[in-house]
Length: 256
Image (tube, rainbow, N blue to C red; front, side, top):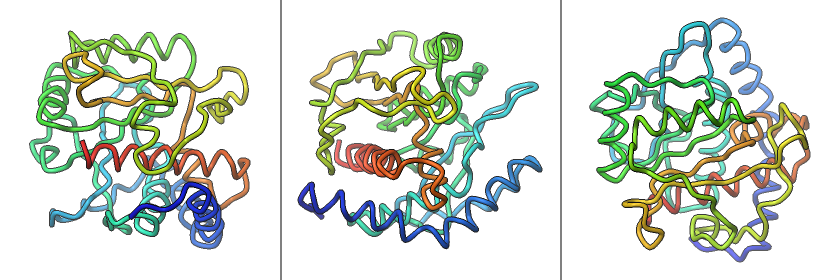
């Protein structure tokens, strides 16, 4: 479903506002789950419908993959369902390890807090195989030079020959559903204004004429903006931009 850009912007704002009541319960519930090391809900049974997939990993002494779960998923899938013809699972989502064979059923996966991620050989190989078969990876929620250095080293273990390159606003991933006019303005909500958000990617065969396999939200956390979109913690334009970026990523992945 194609909607004129101006109308789509208004719709996102109204949908985000509509999440105020439901979002209050969901976000609070998600925070409580994190505080007690989260309760992982059952994965949705595979039925061919789009399902939001979050990647899990183990880091000694630190967590991060579960942040914003499950409120972000629920809020985003509500928006995606309302605005597009994707019609995903709205009230269910999945968590998969990177070397879980079931991951191969799903075209899009979300990786949170990769600044602390250290994949072992099995995780790296599983993620590499999934990407090579057509998987699209969304990387989110990290900031600063140290976290970038760790992520880059970990990503090199997954895709040894993959080159991380900057993406500008003309890239098709930013125009696949919403036409995003600028990438300037956002930053990580934990470090507002300190480091401007940057968007990077990895292409198949390092060839920009081929599909984008990985999109990286560096110095940003669109998951956090979506999780709390009904709470008024952040300016609504940041929540709107987060939903626009996330929607574009999914639509791009499903059409490339």
